[in-house]
Length: 339
Image (cartoon, rainbow, N blue to C red; front, side):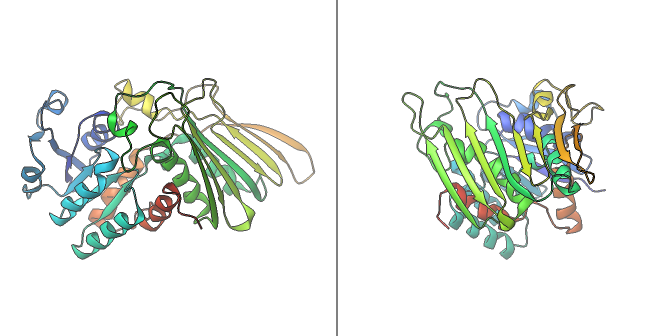
């Protein structure tokens, strides 16, 4: 296995927590360089990493094969474009771009330079949504009627992160958290036939949406109701699925982010394991018309699965499961284009 020499374009929360630990421990990658214009914080954690003060210097390094664009949302398009023009593969943080036109341009550019444009939708590999997918596939719920997906926080004050709180392309909770949930729904049910979006601004002085609701209608009359809010103190169940034969209820409880924040590395044997008493509740009617209730433990969370696929896509030309056509549909919903 030849590791992919990879560079990060930032070493804030995203770089330090969601990217560097995987690039440093997954044998398919080498965390080779980081763009740090001011403080060289990455070197404190990874002494051998190269630190570049400018994007131009980083892109001029012919050893770098893959660049992770994990910068503020409003910079994604221009930075990804520069990386592709420098003939680097790109792993692009969600939300990929603010508009579908921008993402289409990146798709066409990637094709023209024969490089991969891959979007980082790590929540497809969360333990809770993986459990939900398995329950749906089992058929125990019958035909799916409705799915409720929530991503809630309680943050009533304006954040100091200007790129999230100012009126910039890709700002607001719909782009920030809603993009995860929309992607999860599309990964299960495909392209929606119709969608409806409602956003709200409730914090004093807010310039961006801090509440968002999305209704997606899929084939076979499947309804997905998505909610993201910064106003939920008593967190609700993150996943509720109702079918013609039963129900499944699951807390939003993937532990990978908490473990990474606490310093656990992805190669630790306990990484991705769910906390006790966080099982999902499955209630269904069996073939004898008996009502059965089961507690369903989650699968082990596996953000590393995304990086494994990135490696296989670049080295072995395998298909990346986060298809760019799905991302394009996601962006159309995020920008509230009617259909």
